Image 1 (cartoon, rainbow, N blue to C red):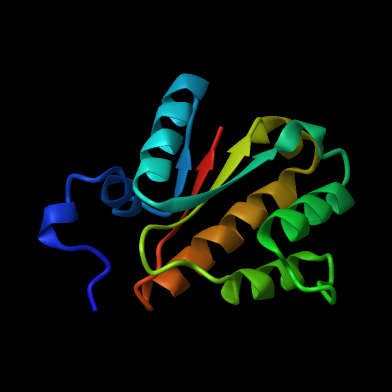
Image 2: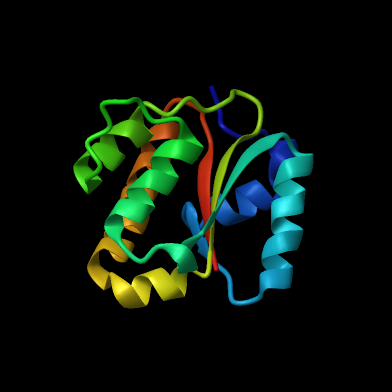
Length: 139
């Protein structure tokens, strides 16, 4: 089963995914326009304000709550990786993770911030193998 049909090749999702599943944004206005496109095209959008994350615990609390991770979520990056593997992604559209002001979080926790995006990119590739779309938009 193909993830995209030829008629979909001009869609924003295809345009982003052909270069990778994590897309960086400088402009908040451009990001908001793209989020609107995803919402109009039946994607589930999960937004995170990363400037408020002043600890890794806050990241894990936010991710677990928004994405519905199980009670036994281990609150570390290995567990985050595992839970993204099991994330339920709709057959129509997909999932978009929107990270606002990620630079503030990245300044506080540079290595984990990079690891989180690497995990998302890896899991997005994994889900694509089964015809499911997951993207991250990072501002």
